[in-house]
Structure formats: C-alpha cells, structure tokens
Length: 142
Image 1 (cartoon, rainbow, N blue to C red):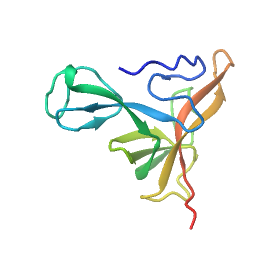
Image 2 (spheres, helix red, strand yellow):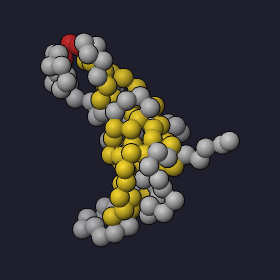
Image 3 (tube, rainbow, N blue to C red):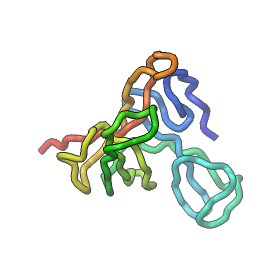
Image 4 (tube, rainbow, N blue to C red):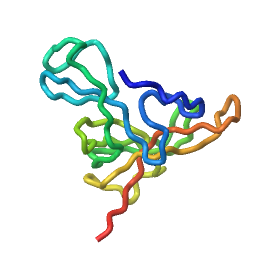
C-alpha cells in the first residue's frame, strides 16, 4: 500500500504526490492487469482476485479530457462557483473525475491534453494555505 506523503497542507495527500508534477497513487491487479484509482485494498473489482494480487502503482498525472461540465450554482462553502469538473482518461489507464483549473468551459474541448497540478488556496476555517489537486489544460507545442 502507498505511504502517505504527510504534507499537512495537502488534503488527501495519500492519494497523490505533492511534487511540482504530481503523480497519483493508484493500484494494479497482477492477476488481470486492471489499473485503478483511487486505490482500494479489498480485492480486484474486475476479476475478483484477492488483496495479495494487488500492488501500488504510480500513475502519471496526465491524460485526455473525456467530458466536462461547468457548475454555476453550488451549495457548499468549500468551493466557489463557477467551476468546471472533468473526466480525464489518464495515460496510464483509469478515468478519473477532477475539478479543473479553468473556471468555465470556454476553450475546452473533448480530447484536450490535461495534466495534474497543485493549486494553493486559503482554508476557510483556519486561513492556512492548502494545496488541492486539479487538472489543467496542457498546451501542445507544434
């Protein structure tokens, strides 16, 4: 199982590295090859192999945008609307949902290359700086 990064300013830091180019801490089934995120240690959800067949796997924080939607009205206090949520199919296999760095969907299109980034903001309760994993459109060079 992956070791937590123990960075108190990064919520869910056991799910990803807090490096300048974050990687996600996923898992892999040795029996069938299934790769998944977030990791769970109950057994493979595809082939049913036991926990002894699961291993930690570092996933590059890069992939392609599969779908997206902009939220214009949100009840929670933890995130300010508007914000955009996307489904990113990681280059290493699994599809994940994540908040994007873009506030609106203007300029986004299906198939855009995306990369994981850490975004700093102040925690509402303690006003301490916190980092959150999001995905940003990666400009391609020709």
